Length: 295
Image 1 (cartoon, rainbow, N blue to C red):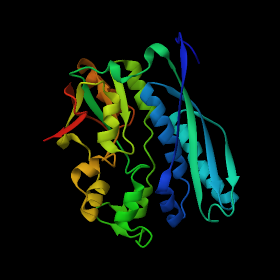
Image 2: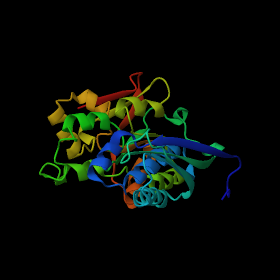
Image 3: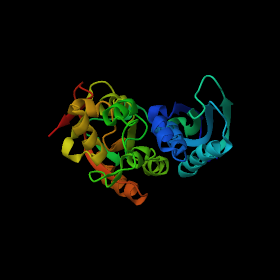
């Protein structure tokens, strides 16, 4: 639908699930990693202001077990439903001798569309803009090499109840990546959104600077960060310094939006109305540090 678009631009994004798949193998649960795969792609695409149109997946495995492939693809389909894009195809590659029989890799790509005049770029961001956070659903799909090492997941009892988490460790870690496409597009359409960062690998320190022009810094109040219990447990068990936590994980934030001050309250209201948990995170100030956590 090109209604209202003067110069449509296609935006594409590609990604995989990474070593989170090792957890799916151990749990023998394969219906959520497809959601992760879709989310890692479409969440990036929408940061440009684009609406995802389509998605294709690629599954490479040691042995094609139709029931397992169907389970994986069911998650991919669910991710597409949640983000409002079409699953138009994909590829399943059986590669015996390259992958163990009970393992696979999963990747994909998405294509979206946006009017050229409405593309979100760092140059739109201004001093005084309010930073709004959308809460994540968990660790998502980044930092799992460290997660696996800290919790020694090959030897851990992944089904044992963890009081600090309110459920089992395996279930907590397999929680799929949050899809924020529909809420983000609604906020963008309402006006005032200048730029967006998807908090993936590299955490706050590597992703938030991408939404800012040179000479501006995101000043974030630490008390406003919606840190989830799983990150508190990770830091405690692994003895991980705070800066490393914020430089590896999303720390409870899937998305950071820079919004014009006069429209920030309405943006939070609208995002919450779309079922998200949105909150004020900080503001954009002068300076070249990129990200500064205070308080």
